[in-house]
Every structure is written in structure tokens, then in C-alpha cells.
Length: 118
Image 1: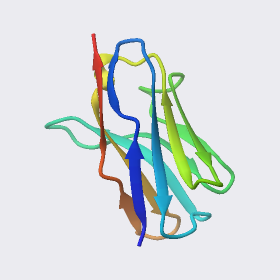
Image 2: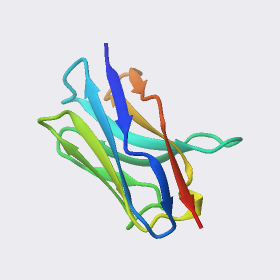
Image 3: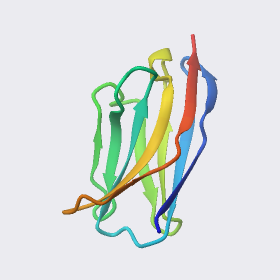
Image 4: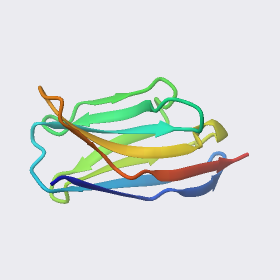
């Protein structure tokens, strides 16, 4: 059974930085894509960034390009989201997501709150 454990959320002032971590366990992830989504009350969950485990290709939402960086640690089965130059509009619950390529199989973490004060 796949488990995703997120950490690293918190309260930060605008312009500050946070790093989110998502530790994955339960299987190997060589044919998977891992990413981050975020959600605020009353809005749909939105894509933030993703990384393909094999090859390391990365993709970002336009709203975070140049400020956020997604990376992975193969040995730790962990994906990171380094968030710099944070803005109040980045405030949301951030969710880790894992999807298996070519299938409808996917998993979500429990979410971690990120709050950016102005």
C-alpha cells in the first residue's frame, strides 16, 4: 500500500521560503510521476509542479515558475518542493500526488498547510 507523508508546511512572511517534503513508501516509483497540488477553501485543487521519476523532467504552473523548484531524492523516495519568494496568494493546503504512468492509479498525501502573511 502506497503511503505519502508530507512535511514542511508552516507560516512565513511574504518573500520568505519554505521547503515541502513528501516521503513515499509501499512500492517502487520508477514508472511514476510525482507532484504537488494546492487548494484553498471554495476553490478546486490546482496543479503546482510535477517531476517524472524516470528522467527527472519537471513541469510547473505559470504562477510558480521561477520561484518554486521540484526535485527528488531517489535513495529516500522523497520529493521536495522548494518555495522561494512566497506570496500571500501561495497560501493553501499543499498536497503531494503520485500517479502511475499509463494507468488511472494515483495516490494523495494528507496535505500540509502553507500560510504566507503580507
